[in-house]
Structure formats: C-alpha cells, structure tokens
Length: 491
Image (cartoon, rainbow, N blue to C red; front, top):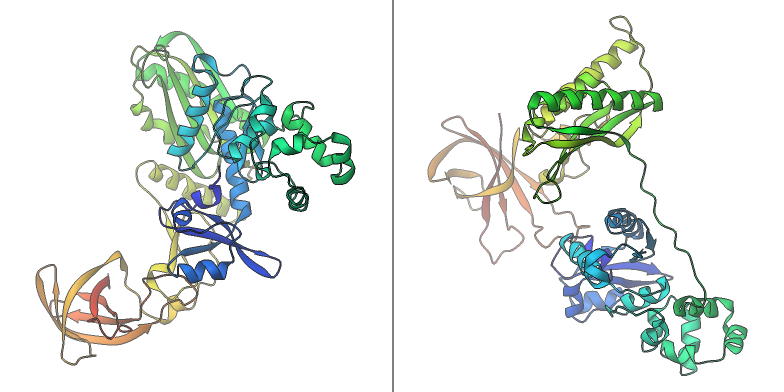
C-alpha cells in the first residue's frame, strides 16, 4: 500500500506528511494529488511549501500506519488463515490452498478491489517467496510469478524494491549495480565479504534458496457460543428461546473469565445461506460499561431481533462477545454506601444502553479552544470528563444552541462598525431591541486553516424576544464587504 500514511487522512486534496530527519525536515509521504504537483518523498519541507503554499501539510504518524496495518492484517484473514504485517506499508498473505475457483489472479484482484473500497490504494503480486512478492508489489508490478520464476521476475527491478540499507544501496550503485539482476549475477562470496551476510541472506530469500517463515497475526479470541439446530426455526418465539439459551451460556462464560461484554454480535445463518443473498445476518449491540447481566443484555437485543428475516428458517445461531473488559463481582450495599453509588452508576449505564438502541446518546467535553465550533467535542455519555473545564466556558456567555453551520443573514447597522439594528433572517425582518458586543475572536494562528478570519460576535435581543448570537466576519479583508452570520440561539 504505497500511500498508506496519506490514505489514512481520507482526503482527495493534495497532502504531504513530513518528519524530522536529523537537523532537516523532509517530506516523508505524499498523496496521489500531491505527486501530480511534482512533490516527492525526501523533498525538503521548505521547498515543498515554497512551491505550493496552499499544500496541506501534516506531521507523520508512524504509529497510526502500524496500527492500521495490524487491523488490515486481521481483516485479510477472510482470504487466508495466514496473514502477516510487513512494515512499513505491506501485508503478506500465504494463499497456498486458498485460491479456490478464482485462482491466484482472482484472489489478488479481489483483495486489491476490497482495499480500494476501504480507501487504500494497493498493488498486489503473487510469488513463491514473500520477499519476491514484496519486491514486485513495492516496485508497482502486479505480477503472478510461476513456480521457480522468482529470479527472472525480479531481475529487472531497481534496488529500491528490496529492503536494502541505504548505505549498502549507495555503495552498490557506486559500483554500477542498479538493478536486482545485476546484484544477483555477482559472485556470492565477494558480496558477503564486502557487504556482510545480510545482503546475501536477502538475495537467498528472494530467489527461494532460503525460506523465511512469516509471523502471522493472531486474532484475539472471541468468547462465543454456537447452537446448531436440527430443524430450521422461523417464528419469533423459537428465535427468542434459542437466543435466551445462548445469552445465558455466554454470560456464564463471561462470569467464569471475570469479564463483562462491551460489544456483542449475533450471527443468524439461514438454511438457504449457500444460494441466497443475505444468508448470514448480523445484529450488534454495545454497552457503556462491561456487562454480563443476561436480563439487561436481552433488553438490548429485544427490538433488534425484529430485523431478522428468517426466510426458510435459521439452522445456526452464534453469539459472540467481540469486545470485553474486566468486570469484578460487585458487593450490594445499603443506601448511601459506596456499593449503592456503584449500583446507581450501573443503572445509569443500563438506561443509556437501552436509549442507544433507538437514538444517538453523547455528552459534550470542553476543549481548550476559544473558537466556539472547537470548544467542545462529543464523547460517549459515560466518559469521565476532567473536573476543571477550560476557563473560556465560564468567562463568556455562550448560546444554548450552536449551529453546526452558521447561517448567513443580512444586517443593517446604524454605524459602519456598530451592532446590527435590523436583521433579515430566512425572509423575516427583525428589529433589534438590545445589543451587546462586540466580542472579538482571533483565529488560531497555529492551525493551517485557510478559512480562518477575524470575527466580532454580538448578543442580540429582537423585539419579539428572540436572543441571537451573530458574528461579523471578513474584518481582516478590507477590500471585501463584511459578512454576517447567525451562529447560535440563547435561551
């Protein structure tokens, strides 16, 4: 996946990542749109910024790419039971015996197409050794190498296709060896004597003279219970009865393991699954706190079970705890005790879980920003919030309803830089009875935001009693007329 670091940003605009390399700041990864502008990895950051001042620049995050590779390796287990991560940008799949009727080309194309749908550009290659397949893919050659043809397939590739240390690659190029085939043609003993055994070991791995086992990822074990039915079930009563047995069995397993479920998945397999679209149906529920109370978990599934379409009936039901957290036994206490407080927390979590099966539930957490749209973020309702919020929340009045997209309004002011005396909002003409302000908000200079601008906010009260929060933007562009927006409503 040659653009994995920039693909993680989910953007079509030109973007480049940069990192510190010694005393220099260099471009480390670029998107396809940035490459079309002539940028390249290894370019000095100052040069890239000078050539394209509007280029979006982000600091590199190797940890994010590594974490995504791990997730994608687990995702790739749908193609083969053996999938491994190859840092910094590749996956290795051992597809021996896994190609089925599609063949090697069909499996490769399916994997690349699915990655593309997930937003990751990829090149796939098939060879008899992991090193050869990696070299071809990293060189952008989507080849399928016949058995024993690895040496011939990789010979035309540049040295950059192999994970050779930069100092070794520089020395090889100084000797006139620019391609893999030219290095393979050299006597092995002088190569090992001059460049060490690592280079010859790499060449042996690429050509198949030596085998390097891959280190496949291991998915975290799911706590699961499965019920295979002798006869398909169709009615809701039968489904409820089987599901209740599965839930009781799973909760006992969770209790024995000292765990509580945070994410549960029910899989219902139809008897006609092999020839019918939607043959395997899934229902997932989540909890705010670790839970193993079968009564509460059954309530979360109760309405969702109506979504199942049994058709000719389900012959297999499986219930999996996809995510779990430790859950110690809780002591039941008297009113006012610590145990009673924990009981109230549990009841609140159960209420929120039931609400979340019907509508989104969240709370706002203060953020250290003076701009209203960045002064808070949505967090799960039971997330612990720091007891000391940013002071800006207490020092300045803010509306109870903040518009996610400020609405343009037409304003008429008595003075050029004064508060509005009249507003036109959604075709209504409003006269202002009282105005307070302005409160000037400066842009956050440390953010690379082309839309940043000075804003003056006013608290207005109309003659009909509406209390509005409006702002005037564009004060730092004297050649353009100021623009007015409605940003919120006060109680």
